[in-house]
Length: 449
Image (tube, rainbow, N blue to C red; front, side, top):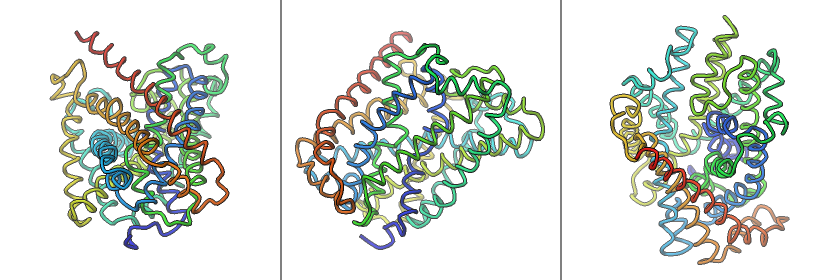
């Protein structure tokens, strides 16, 4: 591989990989899913699935990327002539996910700007979300992502080295204030005590599926990201240890986000199970109740850390498609990044307008924003995961990847257990997510009809 397409340091790679995993899934999605699904029981299910599903799949993708040294599609083609479809579903999913991920990133930029200029959040989140102004913020977020990606692997590494430590420092500042609020203990009990979670109230079979799906979303599995980043690795890197470290940082950040959010939410009597608008509607009310200047200061710190988490993942999503295009279409990075970045922006515009000008456009009760999320979360990612298990586990010899892991980890002794996991356990868990997802779709369509 060209030298410029390799990580320059182990720390840089680790922080970049952690940045790719740590994103809105941790700071936006995990807290509201936990709030909706009973708190502590959901946390336990999530931790179990991180070990049983998240780490093994991450190890597969990272070792496959290093083994091939290529983009996701070319990596799978090296496994089997027809396996390229598994990589292509990941590339396509990354491209589509980034289009609406950037929309949410734009909302975050708007909140930072609003707090910096008016010391308060936008007056009405739903009204802002429905306005054409969201297109501008979507464009700015996508432009910032493309500018970093344009400079290559080195720039991604440098950005991650700055953003990831800063993210943890900002989160720590918010946590200290949150847990010292009156009544904050109730929020901590909701997270860490079974009885405080109403004996599992709100936790059901669908919650198990939500925990499984969140593992995929949070660790950015089957999106081609880990394969792409793995292709920039040298043979000395300890892949099992790296995957454990990334999963540990990702999980820690999600739990810390809950510690930052739930004590404050419970302290001020807000609804922990409000859903996706938790950080955009509920938390601003909490910051407002802190008064001035504490409220705006902590709001700015919080949304900056959310921005850092969002953009490091956005860079990784963009890099997947850029890697595919530069290696298969023979485009230069200077040509690929602007072209793909602008195409992603255009695809995201209907998602921006889905709550306003295009709110009339629905399919089976889903607006455009929800529709693209449905396509990726319920179809492309599970399909890519099942194809991955089929081609790697059954049409190829997965022991080759187990040997690849031993290149930098000679003491790795779980190769046989890992092979059994990829062949049997992982596809079963993916099927649970897929079936549950289609049941949800059916229920939504039936309700819309």
